[in-house]
Amino acid sequence: MAKEEKDEKALTEVSELVTKLAPQFERVEFHKMLSEEGDPKNAILTINAGAGGTESQDWAQMLLRMYQRWAQDKGFRVELIDALTGEEAGIKNATLNIIGPYAYGLLKSEAGVHRLVRISPFDSNARRHTSFSSVFVTPEVDDDFEVVINPADLRIDVYRAGGKGGQGVNTTDSAVRITHMPSGIVVACQQERSQIKNKDLAMKVLRSRLYERYLEEERKKQAAIEETKKDIAWGSQIRSYVLHPYRMVKDHRTGFSVATAEKVLDGELDEFIRSFLTCRITGQWAKTGATDDLT
Image (tube, rainbow, N blue to C red; front, side):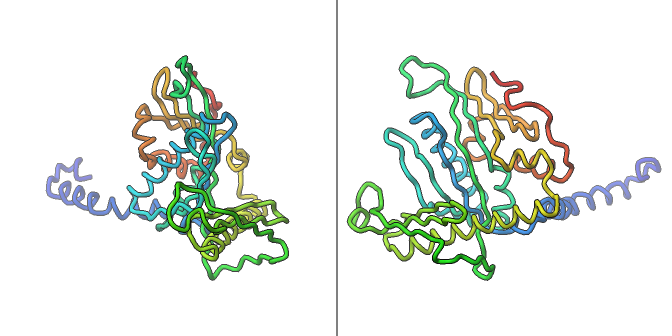
């Protein structure tokens, strides 16, 4: 209206008002996208290397670094709860506790299988390899949320913590592995030198995974998971990171892609997260397959 009436004063006032309200609008929009029960909580993120030995273990290590960098850039605190290193390079698995507001709500977009295509640094013939690693994300359970765990359902094993040495690291059976027999969930922690502290941390991870299972059952009861989301929840391939013959990272659920693969691997994940959250609200998921536009 200001433009039609050529009212420069009103136009300036409206422009200033839009600039002032834009951050508030973005915050409201953000909280609308993160409105599920567990979204405000801290996140427990687990990375598992797929089949392929050193290749996939190195890829798992790259993913671990990517999420650590992302979390640090967001101002979140990152705790490495457990990690099992590979024989030659990389990691077989690792578990992070990412502490900050809405950490789970943001990182739930990362759950699934991640695919890497590159010229292998471990191949003397410089051939192209494809590697897979899976990411599992659960909300950290608050102490005041009751998750009933029957001690009789637990098998607790203690073992000597791994590492490169240091006083008390390899000399006592301080590491703890807990198996929840009814669900088959296995968690481990060797971060602390104290067996008691490691047991407490492992129980925290176990409670978070049981809580996520509870949330999933509630979603199913409410028919809140659509077919596409079921595929995602089952751990199907969600994203490809191509470093050869060209550079591109593409999310197969949303169709969002960028050519700045190195920046993504350095932790620039916000646009992928935002596109995922937007698709959850709109229901407009990509129809392309996992290998579209990728060779």
